[in-house]
Image 1: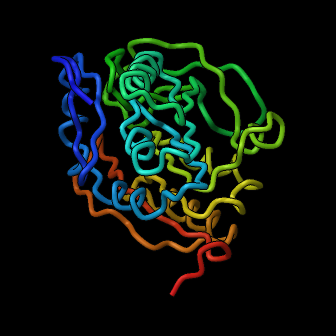
Image 2 (image 1 turned 180 degrees about the vertical axis):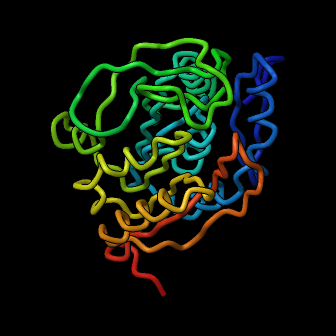
Image 3 (image 1 turned 90 degrees about the vertical axis):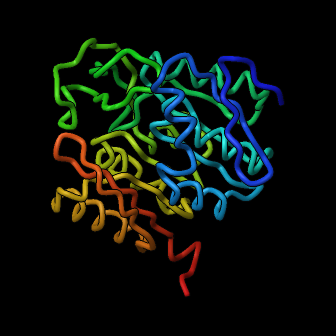
Length: 250
């Protein structure tokens, strides 16, 4: 795998994947892949097995989907990214790596059946984040620069109404919309072995609601990241949960 001047090689152990980088945001994401969220890298390395169906919700330009693909070339990977500029880079990254087991969807996940809404974009730069469906993101420090029409649907509806394969591994990182996505997956959660979800550690009500929902579904918290950097007074930390029925804990 050979990179050109716009492709950044990301090496993990004895493997690597390429990331198309046309701006500093994308270059920063590629360069910090191992250091920014080491718990997510460890989680994928431990949990990706050949039969995995990995749903990457809030895939951005696809780094974790790309890593999952090199870990298990026979696994099914569904990458969800509604922001048009990120989705374009996500598709490019799949192509330049020659991966055939990642399927990208320009869809926002949430609650309810298939519907149309607006995605409020904080920026229109590939690799950017802090976008929000239906309203300005509470994580954003400024007004949206663009309101992009989008399709939204719940995980339950995608699986039960549209015959998508249910996830066995679920990552949710959408800067403030995680609870709605979890709520829209109540029926399917019993088939998920592990969930990694980003939550605002400065919001006790969000932590409590997510904890109650996941514990009722049979999950137990096994790890919380220790990030200290805030975003507009929000403190994003990844929480890793295991399904006790499918993955008995020691």
